[in-house]
Image 1 (spheres, rainbow over the protein chains, first blue to last red):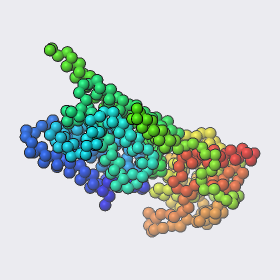
Image 2 (image 1 turned 60 degrees about the vertical axis):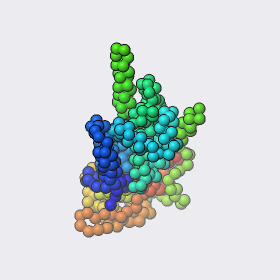
Image 3 (image 1 turned 90 degrees about the horizontal axis):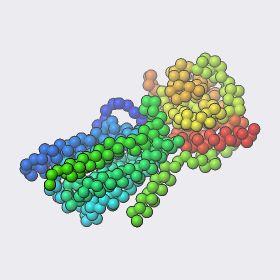
Image 4 (image 1 turned 30 degrees about the horizontal axis):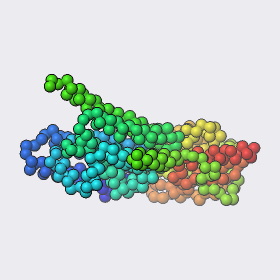
Length: 262
Length: 200
């Protein structure tokens, strides 16, 4: 029984395989959330929707087929997983976490970890550090070869996503930046500067960077280098709709507030 | 300021880790200590014509590989790696001949071999022959003859999983096992071709 998606070193097929570890990792937080919110009426359906959507994104990114493709076949699938975890799943889960639950969860964290979430500079540095480390060829090669390592990689990406979004949409009001301009600047600087370097290396390198995807059985006519180029382009461009969409929302909210009669 | 410094260190580490294609100036394949002359055998190509290996590849950097088209992993990855290397480095492609010899003549007809190789590169040469001719070719190339494993139609073939590189002077220089990366191919083909020019 394989619990978590891992590099398989066998030709890819579209035959479905079960990954019970992914189901557990999806269902346990959902069940815990359901139990927790049952005791705190009234139910906030909007937050519930965000949380369920976040867990669905987590499941889609982790389970067959994307999880398997990303673990051992395609660098582009690996990148899509990263983007789904950090730019879609993590913010949806944060939006779905009510303040009382966030206070309960974050209250259990050790002081250094709790402090981390209150400094945008630290959040940006840690997020980019995690981005760099988890995309380095050595890390990918080591972690994707074992189920535990592959699970660790996916977990690290979710944590990186939480860290990235905390200064903007933390469940705790004191953990968020208060005015929209710093939020917009933070999002731009945290996501658009450092990521350009690995994205460019992936796009313009003349030979494949990741051994695990280079030596994987090919899928269709996609070459290892083309796959890597797609990964690089995804890394650079896929952040645009999410980050600039969020910046646009923040801007329009700010403009609306400014226009409102005093 | 310390955060900026940390960031710079991380960026440098990533850039170093990603820079995998820097030529080293020395062969990275398994160097053959006692180079042997190119083997002499005549097989049948995918057009059904006789192909004299030593004669037709004379003066060219030649990559010789014994495999079969139903191979689930090693053969397609090897050929894809070589094909992608030559695609991205056309300067190497013109001087390199890739010869695939089947070790499964029952299933690998010339048409099947051609269709298989065309998935990678239409210039790759495909050869077949009788079982005896193919065994003799493997022995001439100093490769252990392939053996069939399993019964029925879905049998597999145990075969040598490495590519032999012959420099244009006709001597075997290096072996490349399964898992050879494209940066190694680029590095070594560049050197082997330069060795030719030096010899010329």
